[in-house]
Image 1 (cartoon, rainbow, N blue to C red):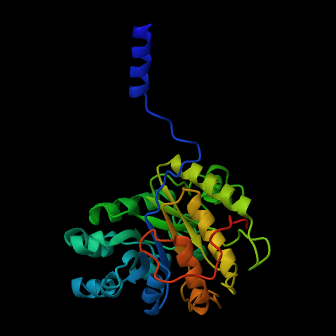
Image 2: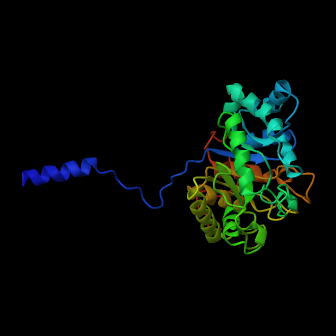
Image 3: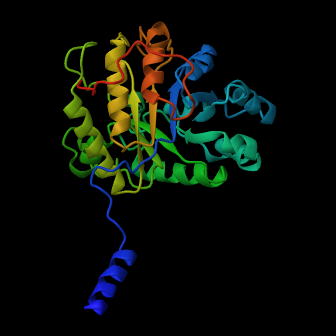
Length: 321
């Protein structure tokens, strides 16, 4: 009997405990805003964020590149480097053009460590409908992005590569079936193109600025996480305009929405976009709604800093969309 007891005790000691199914298993690493004027840096601090997206030119040399890091770093913010301010949405990427900036990062740990990720191209599988491969299909192909990934990752000394892809699940389906656009089939896969992909949630809404579909939000995040886990890519979420003409939503809805995203435990980062924008049909943006800043700060709730001021939103009730 004693031997049985000892055997059971030993088994309990050496057997690892299993994690609950709903355990938070992806710690939030960063939260950022992107595309804006210099006021974006102070706004990021007010929202308790940890990073900003900054367009850095490919030319200019070390002094110029360092100047783009100065303002955010002075505010204690890290940088998501928008490569060449996204010049490669209009023309094919050029490895020789990319390497000097990447090598500067590699050789200067102060700036490399301040760089969360590099975004080489905006929406690379679409690029505003421009065919950049010469294959008759909009955007870049998976093969082309895999080559670009190797150039950026190797030449920068390992800085993660990230893309705002819009909807990774949709692109995965198109790559498999070509159900919406035949030329996407077999050309728009996810494997090997990035370390982080960003899913937009601007369409998770029931009634404009007054509510959102909480169940759909959680299902969408879970499905994107499942697809990306299969290819070893991390998931980030972008909270943007409901439409290009309205960033307006109630402060409570903003708080609930961001809290729900973080509480899933399935995202490595969250982005708020755009801070300000002077192109592409945007007539409203976050800069016009400073009342949102405290709601975002309350939802982020000390992930990166301890908030200095309160918020008018109710942080006690469970977010119910």
